[in-house]
Length: 318
Image (tube, helix red, strand yellow):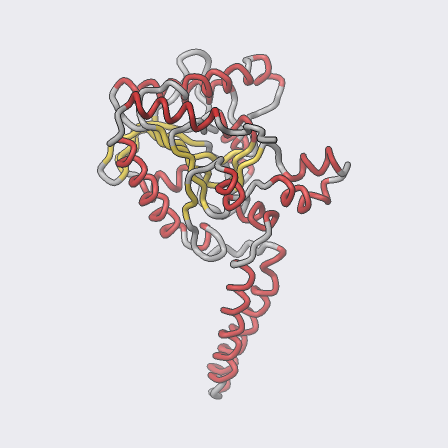
């Protein structure tokens, strides 16, 4: 379990520390404190259920950004086998923030693509803080076309605050690269599954998110703008991010109700970082089931359903 404690978890951490101190005192002084310890552990479990069973949207956003949360390559290591990374967009360069390649999931050969963040400054600079450049999206599309050629399903793991907005990205047409991906994913003649594993920010997420099935981990978020960005526009200050997160309806339960995602993958209590192995097993099971279900559907039917799925989003009913 990570030692990085979020603000709303501090009461739990304090109680855990008190229990640890009591156990230490019992061992050192050879006294029986089992009753007090059992009572406090019961209280701790009740507090955990109350805290993690009633998370606010802003708290889920905080969990989705946790520094110890499993990233794309962690899930590739834990849930996939035989991963072979393929690099370069064949036009400009390789983008380390959007790794991808061939892999096997539960016996199914597939192409897996995703955004990768870093856990320290060196890795974040290499991965560009999980914000892909245009060549990242062009590489992703190249790999998707490879999957189409060999009839492999595409699995895309989304985890980005958004596509890189710098001058270089604009010069190399980041908006066009994302738009082409969205367009071509609509007609890709192979099953496609996207799953938001952390942050699902704006067009940066949509560039690999236009899929037959869009899933979300329980504590991920998927939004056109970050809560801080929304707060800066509407309230003129980032301190209103919690209110913005509530208003944006960016969490899995709200998005399921709105019909914008197709399924929610459960996480261990407190978030995927508390038990990455279990989180990866849940992801593997959900994605494997969806791939097998999609593989049984004729491709022309799949294309019609994919088109209809996205066309009905945002339809206003007066």
